[in-house]
Length: 543
Image 1 (cartoon, rainbow, N blue to C red):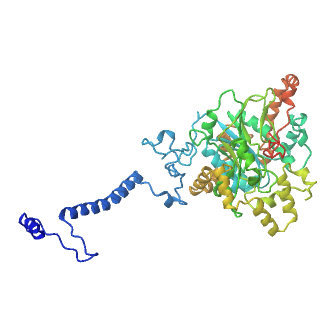
Image 2 (image 1 turned 90 degrees about the vertical axis):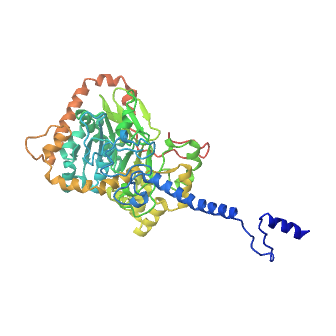
Image 3 (image 1 turned 180 degrees about the horizontal axis):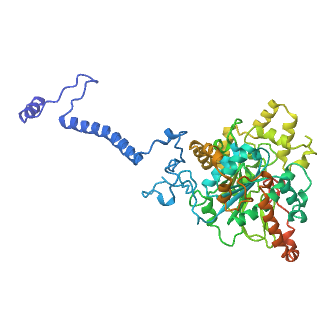
């Protein structure tokens, strides 16, 4: 029967199936099965090649280089932004990509090929004032960074290294920078300042070190108000040269844009400060090497701040090493006065304040190991717990002074690592995830770009050919004498006379001031630590 069916199949032209020779004999495949297998193999081969080609075309976009190959080369860039080169940095927000990507998400509208050529009608006009004894390695990056974000004028009250001939010659050559030396004439005039006849700063008088600096800063800020008014400035900010404004929240990376969006009825804008959290003890150039910061209490939820307080403090006296009450910008207007180094006030009214939700002052404090000894060398206090209270307002500064005055260099380095350097990567990652720590790359990349483009070296080189007349005219001030060179002893003469004129104009309103005791008697705001844990109810002790 089986032979019959086989013969029938052969007679119909059907092929005889192969007989199995055992359990491992290969199966016989038909042509239709072979074709399907070939097509499937071809498809599996072409599919990844096609996907790879498509991905390559998406990333190409006209010849962009791989970001990893640019870092840390000359064309540094933010993640998701265009390279920071002299050709791309001059682009403004209007040049953003039409394809909807993040190619020009952050723009720096005041680069102009590192020329910083501001339009004459630029608005608002912003000035920064400072009192400094730092060197060019710190002051030049500080000035040019703030030029990048839209600051036009700088009023520098210098002494120490900053007042030396080599440093001051460079500073005086910079367009938009006014240098005021601490001469005997200046000190005599400030000794007769209106501030000394009032009570709001009196608790800081006749004390050494940080208290003396605080009074000096306030007196210099008073003079800077006159300078800002006469130069046509709209806003004035007081910053130290270890602080950088971070204009987060603006439509472009611009302090000018940030302040332009402030409502007209606001007199003062408060920038909460973030504090540097260094990850190495061998930092040389903080502005270009530090990217991790501890957020301010004002930019955290209460639950996060107090819930992570002990871990974030790491055994130090407070959440921040130094101050935590931020800095401020004030509209330049009549009767404006300083209220200590951190705030401004007005002789005639209580200013309307606005605290920013995203923008901050980045404070690079104790970023170098040498900062321990520099603070020690500036103050003549005894290294005892009682005597340091005369010199320093904050607990950590007191502890650091005692260590620097009594310990060996090896002991100081060990203390520095334990209390200042963030070496625990596990803790760092935890606090970064919780939002206590944050990464801020913008200043680092800007300062690195400035250095790589030769801005600092060019400023030093060009200072020898820059005339005093050009310098004075660059910020709109008349020259103080007819000679081509103004001696340092008379460099502040114009400012002193301007301050005298301001006092004369203010004399007419003194009677009205006596009718406003709540305005004039408000005590100056000192540097204050952030809120601390209260063991009873976990509420902030300092608001």
